[in-house]
Every structure is written in structure tokens, then in C-alpha cells.
Image (cartoon, helix red, strand yellow):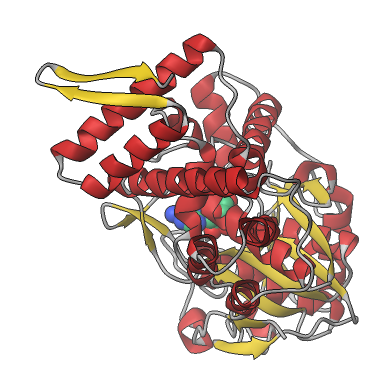
Length: 471
Ligand code: AMP
Ligand code: ZN
């Protein structure tokens, strides 16, 4: 039985899908006005691990992800500028060009991180009719009002507004924030459909019963999840910043339309990636992309390994030294697997039955997706001298179905041509020297052993280290 921490209720709960064996999973996708930063990628990595785990436990998961290419404002409460418009103006491009460029960049990033592609990827701009139909239902049920050209959702009509975020409705109702939008009856009201107001120059406009205009941000997730999953869904996921506004509003409007409650059975939220004690964010500047890590000489899988070391509900502090340490661990893992491969010497067959490490690995995952514990089981497995190399490898490759570190490919002996081999030997020698400089003799000995296994003999001389091929 899988246990998940449900934000709705704030407790660990036994996971039971609405329909036996099948799961509808909706994860809020990227807003494609800029590159995703590595904090955003933490959210998509969390969805990936969760979905891989659910599939490992035998569930059929329908994973739906939206692409926000219209309507998301820089402020969550209908304030600020339209992110897409702002980005297009700054870059001298059209909104559609911007959306296409950053959508492609996003998919390149998630592919490099080994994040499995969703079953359905849906763009907001391609689902305007569905949004209009949904808004009509909300309006017919009496949850809206029209003011100064925009259609608002009235949160005072929704009896359980703010339940997810534990918001106090009396606070939300305490008068409109006149400095932001004089038309709002309650501070928490939000726009379902804009026809005028902020963005006279909005590039994308659609006809609707309320006039030519464009949707508010939240409605896309309700409309698209309904189209591709149904009126009730098992799991909805996103970063914790979505709890107080975006997800709270999604719930209010969807339940207003369908009258069914709860719309979502389990709400899963990942904590932030933090840098220098602050949440990494696109608007704050200083954000890091996956490409910039690669340009620094890291592999995307080093970052995946780094993410695996943190539990999704804890903040994760990013720094280059922390990423370097993840890279070293991943290298040591690969080296260990290569050694086991050499010792096993035969085709690795899938594991017959199970072993204690695999059982503990599965238990860690079923316990609210504890990737740090799961990773520790992998290490225990490959270091256990009581296991045959073939068994350890088979179990490690099985675990990789969740970890997504490409262990099988990484463990293959490296076949280098001569110039690559020389470069690799020299890289290892300088890494050994660095390890010695900081008195990390364990690592320097490990490297000597790796080189030894490659048939290289080292000679430490007063002038530095030289090497020769073992004859
Ligand atoms: P966006 O592209 O801004 O819509 O965000 C995509 C996802 O990243 C959302 O689920 C956010 O909640 C999440 N997110 C934003 N910043 C961070 C961060 N620093 N760490 C982890 N997740 C984040
Ligand atoms: Zn959403």
C-alpha cells in the first residue's frame, strides 16, 4: 500500500484510486515565457518519481500536463503583467514564437533529466472552447459576476473556499483590495474571463459570450484536466507556491461547475529548491538553468542524482559544491557498477524473486516517495559482499526503473579510442591530485584502483605523477 501526504487534510493517507488499478494524474506544467529554472525542474522531477512509483506498484497512470501559453500574470491575484506578453515585448518576438521556443527548450530539459513524457500534453491556447464551456457552467450555477468588462468568480458563493490552503474566508472577504482591482467584491475573487482592462495590446483574443477576450490563468487546468481525465481526478500535483491561489481557485471553480466534491482526491506539493536561502524564481533573477549546469561541465544526470538525495517535501538547498558532491557520488556509483559488471562476467539476467534491499527500496518509495532512503538501499545493495555481482546488478538495474540514472548504460565498460583514453586517464590523474591536495586519500586510492583496472600504472615522482601502460 502506498502512503502519500495529502495537502488536503495535511496528513499521510493510504492511497486508493477512484477506479481500481487506474490513476488520473494532473501536474501543472510550465509557463513558457522563459527557460525553466532548476527549481521548476524539481517540480517535474517530483511528478516523474511519483508516477514511476505508481506504475511500479501496478497502476495504469494517465499523466496529463498543461503548457501555459496565455493568461498567466506576473502576480498570482490577477495583478501585474501578462508573463507571455512581457517576455515577447522584451525579446522582440511574437507571443506564439516565444511559446514555441520555450516549450521546445522545456521538453529538451525534461528529456535530458530522464523525466518520462506525459501521456497528454495540452496547450492552453488550444483549449479555449473547453474553457468557455466550463465558465458558462460556473456562471449558470451562480458563482460569477460581471464588472467593468471582466467576468469574476465570487469566492463568497463557494462554501469551502480556501480549504486546501487553510485560508480563513472571513479574511478573504474583508473588502476588495482597492489598490489592485476596484471591481472585486472579495479580496480573493479572481477573473475567469478578461475582455478589457489591463492588456489592450493582448496579442491573442478569442470571441466568447462575454466579449472578445482571453481567459484567466486558473481555468485552463480545470478545463483540460476535465477533458483528458474526467470530472474527478486522483492526483493533482505542483509546487507549494500553488496552494494558496492557483490550486485553491482551481478547486473553487471546478466544484462550482460540477457540484462534485472533492474534485481531487490527493493533492501533492513539492517544496522549493532554495539558493542562498531564497526560493529560486524566474522573476527574482539569478536563476539557474539545466543548460548552464551542463555548460559548467555537469551532466543532467548529476542534477537528477542531486534531486534524488532530497525528500520532495523538504526544501533542498542548491549550491555548486553540493552538486559536485552529487557528481562524485554518481561517478563512484558508476565505477562500482562497472566493477560488478567485470566480476559478473556474464549476461545479467533479470532478478528472480526479490531481495531485502529491493524490498526496503520499495518500502521507502511506498512511504511517501522517500527517494533518499531508496538511494541508500541502492548503495547498501551494491556494497554488500554477501551478494553475487550478478544478483546485485540485476537488483540495481531494477531500482533504476525509478531512479532513472541510466545505470545499465553507465555500467558498460567504456570503450575509448586512443585520444579519448588519454584524456580520461589525465582527467583521473588530476582528480586524484585534487583529492590528495584536500587529503581525501580514500578517493585518491579509489582512482588509483580505477586506473589500475584500466591497465594503467602510476608513478608518483617529485615532478608530478606519470603513467604507463601495464605490459
Ligand atoms: P511555472 O513555470 O512558473 O508555472 O512553474 C512550474 C512549476 O515549478 C510549478 O509547479 C511551481 O510550483 C514550481 N516551482 C517554482 N519555483 C520552484 C522552486 N524554486 N522549487 C521547486 N519548485 C518550484
Ligand atoms: Zn495548474
